[in-house]
Every structure is written in structure tokens, then in C-alpha cells.
Image 1 (tube, helix red, strand yellow):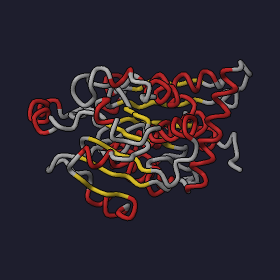
Image 2 (spheres, rainbow, N blue to C red):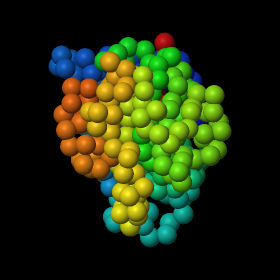
Image 3 (cartoon, rainbow, N blue to C red):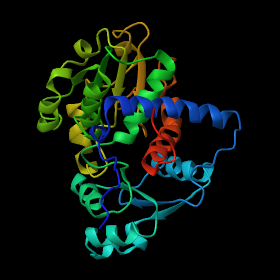
Image 4 (cartoon, rainbow, N blue to C red):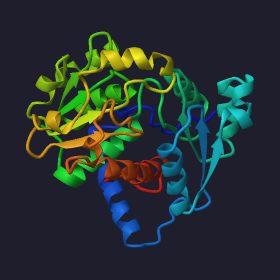
Length: 307
């Protein structure tokens, strides 16, 4: 079985130099699209999109990326494939990777994407698991670079749940060379192993005001992720003091940016007015999923060689 395919399951699958190269390429591809420059590196290529978790941004960004670049995409959900009917993941991976050129998976357990990648002949992209969301981090880092330049040496603050986004931000702190403050309620800390792996770049705190002080970027996410809806009320109580508002942002650096991977629950983790604050760059951040993922797929498919 050919095992030469390269995968993107976490940010650690690429070197810091490669990640910076992908961001630079994403910015180029964005400019080309804006200028109407025809560019079809994925002609006759097919992306298989496996969704066990629902999505708006992930599906639209990946599907649009393939279409705009001359390729095609197949949407596969458990309802209309053998995935939901007990076929071993390894068998699905073996078969699907003989029919498509690249695969993205949005699922629950991170072990599923690892198993799939192990048996796939083509590149596999983690489009979100309960543990990591690396594609969102590419978009976030691209957005920061566009607005403020290099993030190296800056301070970033994560406010809220120690979830998959928080885990990916910890990896990003090491890979992109910034310092991450994490402000979360006791009992909602991020994964201990990921924290230990990145401890030189991360400070864990419980006071959001102290955490955001002098930060260059403040980031949050919903308090209850997909699959945690039954915990919603308990989480609202636990996170009551962790809402990002203009007043909290005022404690950050003068040129601080605010990001949220969306969808946002206005009035919970982010105040209703914060998303419309001039410091919020959430719409650019959402759009950049399209461009960053194009650049990532170019590299994985071998249609673009990083400098």
C-alpha cells in the first residue's frame, strides 16, 4: 500500500517555515481571486468531504475552493454513505482514497482522522475534531498577518473553554512563535498533554482581565461545543465572567484584534456589540478559510511547491 501521502491533522504536521509559506501563498491566492485571475491547479481533481459533524464555513470554503480552482468536491454524510452503517474506517479509507485525490474529515474523535490517514493513499485534512481545528488556525494566522504583520513575539489571549480551538492555539503558539495566555474557569482547562507539550509558550490563568492585558489578539469560541448542548446551562453559569466585550478589549493593546471562529452566540461568549466593533476581524477571518485551505490543498496535492 503506498504510504507516501502527506496529511494535515494538526499544525505540528508542518514546520514553522512551511506554515508561514502556506500563509504567504494564501494571501497571494486571495489577491488573484480578487483580481479575477483564472487559476485552475485542481483541474480534474476531486475532494472527498466527510462530514460527521455539521458545518457552514467548512463545507462552503472547501467546496468553493475546489470549484474556483477547477476541481470538484463530493459531500459525504453518515446518512448517505456506509460510514454510518458500521463499515470499518480503515476499509472506507482504502476504498475512498482510490477514487478521490484528497480527503477532508470533520468528525468527533481525533483518532478517527488518524486511522483514516493511516489507511489512505491520498492526503487527509482534519477539518475539525473534538481535539483540534488546525484549518481554522491557518485562517486566523492569515488574518493577523494581513492586518498587523508577523505574529512572532506577540501576545495572544484565549478566553473561554479549553476546547479544540484552544488546543490548536497552543500548537500555534509554538509553531508561529507567540505567547498564549489562556483564561478559563477552573475545571474547563485545555488538554493536559497539549498544554505540557507547549508549556514554554503558554500561561494558564483564570482571570480574563489579567489575561487580556496588553494582548495583541483576543480570541474566544462558544462555551458549549457540538455534542455538549446538554451542558449549556451549567456552562453559562461557569463562564459568566468570561464574555469578551468592548470593555474587556479595552484592557488589551491599543492595536489589539478580536477573533471568533463562528458561529457566535451573541450575548454569551461575546457581547452583542463586540462583533461589530472595529477591532473585530471575524468576517475576514471567516473568508480566509477559503484562501488558506486552497493554499494547503495546493501543497498537499503537489500543485504548488513551498519556497
